[in-house]
Length: 400
Image (cartoon, rainbow, N blue to C red; front, side, top):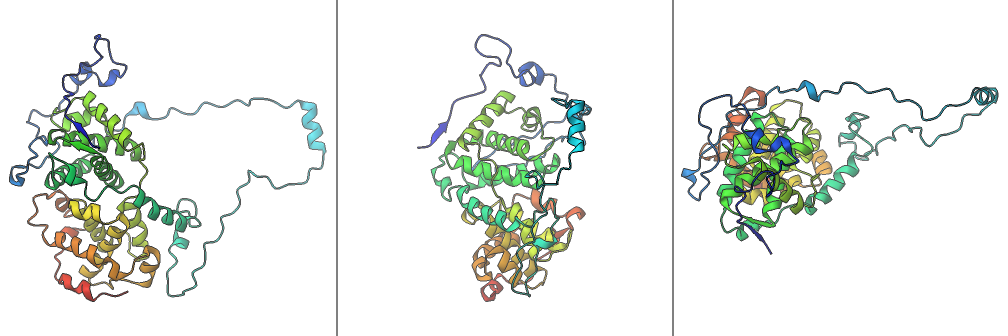
């Protein structure tokens, strides 16, 4: 049973019915009036979401928290911790006089075990090249296996848009296009964007939302994702500002509470970014190469299309993006190493790769152009300007 979000949150008095000051003093109405506005120009909000795509406007956030490192947030230093007890001098001399044999302590870290050796000599052992401390080479395969199981558990319902009475897939595309621009302006991590989209789709799978509240859902989901992933997430008043004060801080926090409750606080979910990072190592892609940036570009393009992003699993989208990027760059499309680590054969990815390729061919005609503008910059190797010369029918003849 879906819950209709039709109640108006705009008339809620900050501080409660008795006029008392809210415990969240930072987000009261008095503090919002003191927020400095850097420019006098009119801010464009995402308030024109409609079924008419031509009427939908693109939002350009008029400011971003660039380089906002607050001195107050920096740690001042750790106080010296005093021991809880002391050893008497006589006991200490008694311990030193004894010939204590060294024993194995359960607190001593054992050296990392060697990675499982690959029997096939033609395969590249990507786990052995990982950093011994942060790469976790001895656990990398188990982590990947867990992510493959978790992606099925935390995927949105493929047909949830049919139960939405007031929104449609085109409105979702406009919202995500705006969120991509917000993430770029605030210099958020790529994983933050993917988590935001996952939260939105999962939330809409259970809740029926009015079109006037769709941007509020997107802002609240990005706020949750930023708190989970970022070191310095944007503040609530930043999301109020970029929505042109369409919603109040109290409404954003109220929606944040509803999102967390609906998602049952399951925030650590696998996304395309998790799988793409590992699969690019299996593809032997050089860091900051066209192969890497084009794969990331194709993977990010897939989030715009509703049918594509909810129909296929994140791991399949990541693998299909690499397959299509190799075809565009005239690189051997698939290898045994990719098949071993992705657990996908090339023919299993053809349908997903065709769907991504169809969007890639129509990028110039799409109304949402934020992702294209992002990957046209030299920072990403200008991969958005690469044209696909080969026909998509070549995918029908690809075999592992």
